[in-house]
Length: 231
Image (cartoon, rainbow, N blue to C red; front, side, top):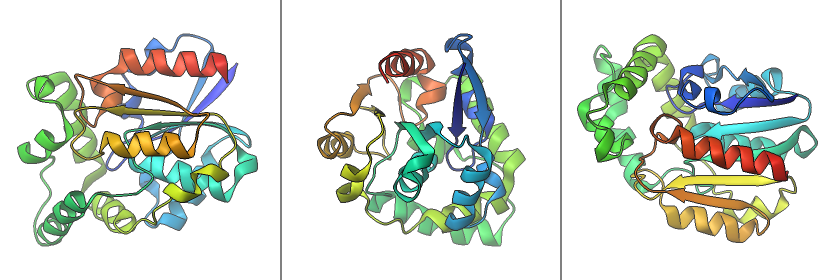
């Protein structure tokens, strides 16, 4: 049985994968990396190392996908395959950096009450802004993990090195999954990632925003199953 090690994104935990894993069938063992336990990028890599297999199949989302790229570059012998969801190897866009610079002082000076409607509009495709089942998962993760985790993750991941030119160093099989409607990750970056990883598979889905595992679990499951069969 193949073990999949899931690495979540900012202010996410294993609930990020709750709509996806039931669609992957019984041929996998699921393991969840508790990224929220780390406060620095170095600690994040230590958590990934401690909670993933010695030769891991990493399935990683957003911040977690960027960290998975870094981890594969640092420890190529420990990564058997990579699924990179909703993340650019370039790191954060300038718009997202500006958003974080606006949010961080507000977080420090006030109580955190969960995801704002404005932030949800940035994260979700317009067709899902009324889907309370998705919003409830996002909001509950945000409230449970809380302000300290959000501040630590925002701060630790703000200035990320551009890894695009180093992607060719990765020799394991790679699947890149993105969304045409992702407001945080430019699909052009994903196509450039594939150019640096010519053997990588790339799929870009319509009808979903940034939160692909929650918004488009069936297409994502199909991507992962096809990738695992071929890997």
